[in-house]
Image (cartoon, rainbow, N blue to C red; front, side, top):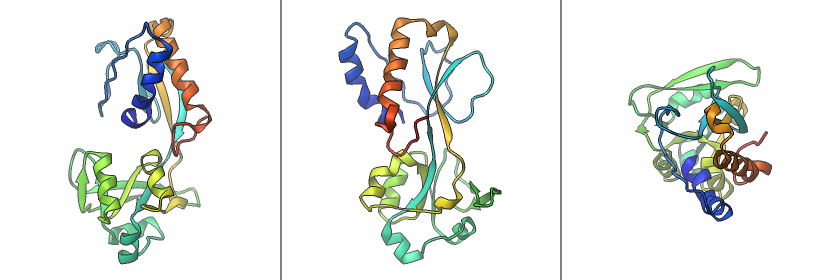
Length: 204
């Protein structure tokens, strides 16, 4: 998210605020804002109770998709249970049996254990493999919006998606009143309003 949705906006922010400098840290791990002297961070999902100030910016959904060539060769899954007979590409730092959760049209949740054909800890690499016909991938919707629109990937099982997850910008209370932090928070909120540039995300 930081690489695709935040970094491209920073040149405009710097032009609007010539006296401000930005350090952007792109990591796939929880960060401790106070200990690491971080002014603000993006968090996806439900927030635990804490003393941090949070501003909800958007919601995102996870989607499953595959290349047309794969679906022609292996067929299109009609239910989550069908995934057991498919090649699944899984994002994880720990190889092994994966799990994908679903919520059916009846509102009942289910979990499918997968013997993944390919494990990668990079969304970009997983999407590239899916576009080459290696199998089905589950990624944030904004990661594949352009590929789906262009026909390089086809969305499947969209009737079984989990509810969208919130995206918050969080900051320590002491940072809330800092003009530089407030300027960035307001800038990001304004640029993400109206569903732009959040391809495939839902702005609340």
